[in-house]
Image (cartoon, rainbow, N blue to C red; front, side, top):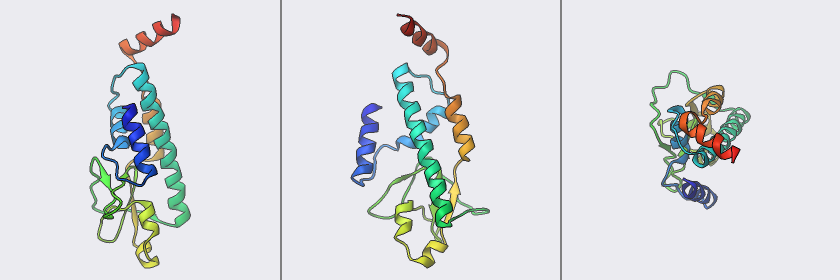
Amino acid sequence: MPMSGIAYDHSIGVQYASVMPIEPIIWRMAEETAQVDQKLFELIKLFLLRSLAHAQRELEYIQAKGYTFATGVDVELGHVMRCTTPRCKKVLFNHVPFDRNLKPLCFKCCDKLTQTEKKAIKVVKYKEINKLVDICDKYVITGTNFSMMVFKCLE
């Protein structure tokens, strides 16, 4: 998982499509309260907090750009959504903009559209920010993993 995180960050930095969709994976793990050891828990929690901050920045960006949230749009969000721009393929999470043809785009690719095309963008929200905060807060070490952590702290 640590190497996947490093590779994911590197892929974003060089604008290369990430093979491993880390963000959807860690949120699914948190929702399903996956039991892991302390080190992996800390890493997952770090990814969750980073992703949460990114989702908040995206929300502010959507509001600043005047994009509208889709209501009544028949779009099913898959487990992993990617930008459909041929040279991009960025993994999308939580706020997914769609063009008039209902093709998902990342916000960077949305910025390259004409003003007319930008007006047609509708954003589908995966989860409310408060729900993501709740998932993140509820993801804690429990059971035997928690006992192992307490004993390590007492050593």
